[in-house]
Amino acid sequence: MKVRNLLLSAGILLFSLVSCAHPAASGYADSRYFAMDTVVTLRLAKDGVPDDALKSAEAGFEKRLTELDTLYSVHNEESPLYHFNHSADPLENADGRLVDLLHTASAVSLWSGGAFDDTLGALSDLWNIPGGGPVPVKDQIREALGHTGQSCFTLTEDGAVRNDPDAMLDLGAIAKGAAAEELVGLLRDTGVPYGLVSVGGNIGCFGGEAREEPFKIGIRDPDDEAGVIGYLYLRDGFVSVSGDYERYFEEDGVRYHHILDGRTGYPADSGLRSVAVWSTDGAAADALSTAFFVLGCDRSAERCSDCPYTCGAVFILSNHHVRVTPELAGSFELTASGYTLDPCE
Ligand code: ADP
Ligand code: MG
Image (cartoon, rainbow, N blue to C red; front, side, top):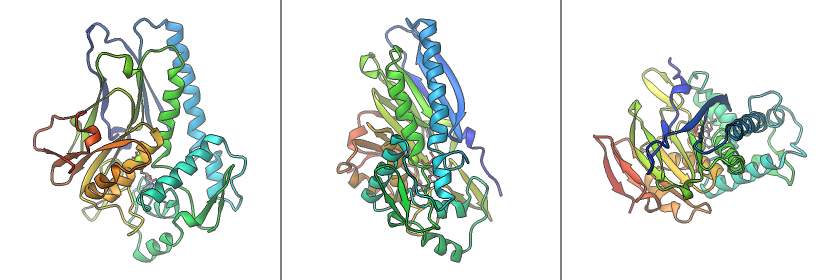
């Protein structure tokens, strides 16, 4: 049984800036942190920015990241969600950001028909993918599935109430994107003209409108840990990737990855290796990448245009086809050989 090192396996390999009109403007301040169970990277443009402004932006970033790490965690024993998941108490007087996130999660879950489902904590806990399994027996899966679904919880104005004592929330597929969005919001007010944030591969960029060239964001090749399949060229918004190579364990030669299909109780098997979603909303980009991975290319592409969040997607299929929705058709460049690029009809 093998557990992959998640630190090396973020879906978005790198974020790089296209060299702009001034090649010497390759001046960025990069910093790395570990939070939210993953690697967080910050890249700030430093040309023309006073040193103390840069330092203060980095310090403010780190402080907010530490706060979000506890606010959105289901593992930290000090966190409100840990307490909610492991006690009979309702979640009350919760931080407004957490309440908003729970409402967004519920909305995406309903919109996606449960493909994204923040209430499947009992199932993800049973699978214990980061801990290396083992594969649960069918009866355990059936039992856990009985404690998932939006009806297990009632959201309130300041928190949530559990209707099923064995149900648990899992914000693992939305919290990092929400954090990326909040961190980008913070950076916009620091005087730094542009930059990028990556929270475990959930990327947010700011200041791109004022740049001559867009940001160039590499999307990982699912078959090659060190390679990119191509690039997204973006000026704003958020990109999240969900893939079967991010966290998984192997048992008897079968790979069991961490994105679960709430209809079957098993890791999703929709013909995708990964999907990258761009959205103007960070939490939505994260949640939708998970939903689209579960739904598969055709069903997701159909639904992109009626999504309540502005979004577009690049689907990397197991058969080495890459499909792009119209929203991103002009923004994606395939660079890896061995793949065929098709538009989504
Ligand atoms: P990553 O966390 O690697 O960025 P995702 O954003 O796709 O990947 O989130 C996967 C995590 O979300 C899992 O580790 C699990 O905690 C949880 N999860 C798994 N399947 C689902 C699902 N169908 N809907 C919502 N959350 C899920
Ligand atoms: Mg996600």
